[in-house]
Image (cartoon, rainbow, N blue to C red; front, side, top):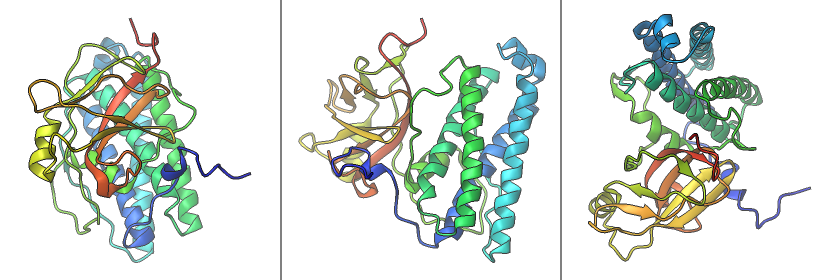
Length: 305
């Protein structure tokens, strides 16, 4: 049984393979694994078991973080070895800057990184030509998904908030990863680009589907200066949730620098990605002008009180 041609999920199932094929994809994955490995290595060094317990993460949470670190180290070794065996130069560890300042912010960022890791492997899967590599990537994906569920549960969030995980394409993931890379030189140049950052205006409230407004700080000013966008140019905040892609027309609120939407669309939940697009129907890279940003979205009435 095939999917209907009218299905809203159709364009999020697969993305075109990048130049360099499987070698590029493995180096892309290795880039993410180095980032995650360093993140856990630094977190375990910066915060003690007692500090995690004091922050509300009782035993055996610290021990399980060590196991996650070992998993990420194993992924690094495996991918680096696979590239070397294939005669492809592997990338190397770079310098990373993580905005975690205490155990809680560390675990919160861990949830983001694990969620992005799931989306990265899921989005890349259909572009992998070698079936052995595809199986290996799938094996890593399921482990990253278990990491994500465990961390989400530790934060008192649903470990499985939506029936589908969300695939992201190579440039979307690279845009998120690049925000944490602050130095170093790799022998490998990946053929990806980072979109302009999309910054959410801070709010004290939780985000709820079909209710909460969202303001994108200075987004119109940035789009205007970077792409020549005018106040009459249609721009859409596109929500990626599972296999859905849901556009919402933005408007420019008083002050003239931000973009805003009145309500998050119904039917999204969990870790949701948002990009700004100049098209209401084609959300390919050529139409994206900022993003992705990440929101944790709850059903109406489902946010913690």
